[in-house]
Image (tube, rainbow, N blue to C red; front, side, top):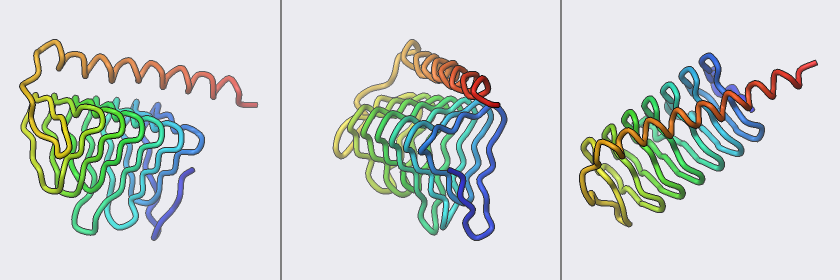
Length: 174
């Protein structure tokens, strides 16, 4: 569902899959080849949400903003099921594990992994290429090159899944 808010309409790039039940509200921008899966809500009513290219937002995620902080999610990002992203910044080539919460003003550096169930508290800033885990979250260690490449492979995998949904949608058109 695409919802206009204060004359601001979501802008969706090329070859993007928006699943049934997903809601995009207001000043949302989604880059090419990305996907927003079932029952996720991207509510950009009091600020903006920008999603990069080849990024997937999986089922039941909530992305919202603060008056003074937008949401910015980079390219090649995988956002796992049931994640809450609130008024924060996620770098390129990041994997965010299921049921994690990232709060206002937080920054996750590129090439990182946020482990499932982690809570990143307000204004916490993490550098590049690290494994982030816990409640509250902290850096556990640096990632290996193989793990960083794994983030990219996950994004490419979900781009393929998205493409299959788009193909099936096109075959269902009258």
